[in-house]
Amino acid sequence: MALALTLSTAVAAAAAGVSAPSAVASAAGPASASASAPDAVQQGLNALVRKDGAPAALAAVRDGQGRTRDYTAGVGDLATGAKVPVDGQVRIGSNTKTFTAVVVLQLVGEGKIDLDASVDTYLPGLVRGAGIDGRGITVRQLLQHTSGLPDYEGQVDEAAIRERYFEPRELLDMALGRRPEFAPGTKFAYSSTNYVLAGLIVQRVTGRPLAEEIDRRIVRSLGLRHTYFPAVGDRTIREAHPHGYHVDPATGKPADFTELDPSAGWAAGQMISTNSDLNRFFTALLGGRLLPAAQLAQMRTTVPVGDTGMASGLGIFSRPLSCGGVYWGHGGDIPGYETRGGATDDGRAVNIAVTTIPAGEGGTRHVEDVVDAALCR
Image (tube, rainbow, N blue to C red; front, side, top):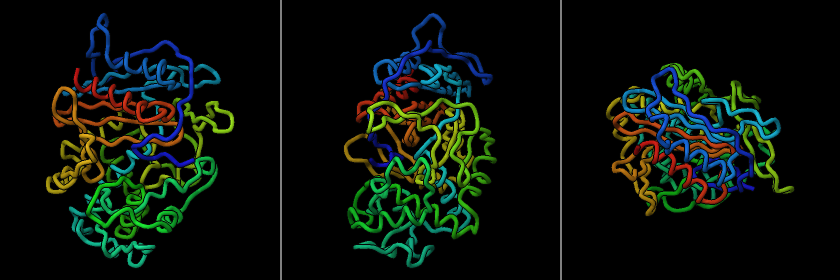
């Protein structure tokens, strides 16, 4: 079964019981919804648990004045029935790609990386395969998923990631054994392989581990106190968190996947965070606190993602809102957790996490519907 770190969904959801839902105002400000009026976000989370089978759903919603409201539904542990921790830590999967892209673009702004230079400029001779040549692929194409490089994810067995550590080069080798999807720069196709290479370029240029660069340049800079890149061999989640589940193909029952080795994600999907920290990250990014204006403009220059209405920038996607305009974010899946959300240019933000990867495209769409409801209310 394929490792799920991307925007797609690949496994069936676990059926779960429902505990009493809750919505609380954070210390950042008062609740924005009337206590007597139906709350679309809470109703949406309840539906994700009752109808879509997510064991738990969590959300943090930030309004344009910086006030935050936190929500939970379901149970945090199927074995004990424990409550869902408010704003608990979760594995954020491919949201990691945006962190990696920010570091690359900061290095562009510092004159250390050229977006239109070839991958071979920084990793000479590394990207070679059947019809694949790093001399014809640019850094920009990596960040925008227009390189044509095949995705390594389908080559990784989900059962293996619970215990096994993967070196980035192993992940790359899985992809380079296959032919390219298309000529570089001619199409869009999502591939985590692009971000393994982006992470390797960061390490080559800086001489430091990617995790240290993300921590120094983003996490500590913004004060993201609940966000980190797990160290080698760290299979746990440090702070209060809901358990994550994956349907065991042998039994058809939900198996606890909370603890696993996330190295199969690395620069494409290894990080842990909270919904509120992700809101702070995306609002700071769009507000110009992480990138110079020129690099932020490059990040926001997009190509269409088929006929979905989505568009791909450099490490970030825009999605249309039902109330008009767009929001910018990423999202991520990793066994046990799915996250969706982003921010608008006027400072509104929402991130939602569920503790299993929803079954089929409909499940993910339902999570994105709650994001839309939160940003459009």
